[in-house]
Image (cartoon, rainbow, N blue to C red; front, side):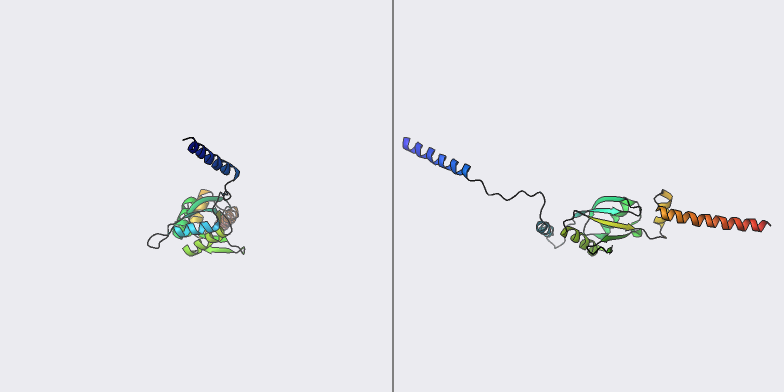
Length: 181
C-alpha cells in the first residue's frame, strides 16, 4: 500500500534529521586514569583470599656515582624490589641501603614493604609516574671493594684510598731505609 510506504519514509526522514541536528553528549577523552580510578583499580586487584596482586611501579634508582637507572619493580614487596635494584647494580642486596625524598624534602629510609608501599602511594597521590630512590652502599662491605675493582668507585673515595695507600707506602719505605743504617 502506498500510504504505508510514505509513512515509513516520513518516519525515517524525521529520525535522520533528529540524529544530525543533535550532537551526542559524550564525556571528554582522557588518556590516563584519574587517581581515584587508579586507587579503585588497585583495590580491584585483590584476590579471592584477600591477598593482593603485586603491581609494578617505575623507579629511578640513583647509584653512588649519581647515575640514574630506570626500572620497573615491585611496588609492594620490598624484598623483590631490593633484589631488582641489586641485580641492576651488580651488588649484593644485603649491602644496599635505600632512601627516597618525601614531600617534606627529608630522606626517608625504605626498610620494609610498608615503607615501600607508603612511598609509592605518596608518589601516585602527587601524580608522579615514578619514584626516585637513592642507593647507599655502607663502607666496609664487600660491595665497596667490588666497586673499586670494577672502576665504579666514587672519585672522592678513590682519592682517599690513594692517599692512604701512598702514606702506607712512605711509612714502610722509611722504615726499610732506617733499618739498613
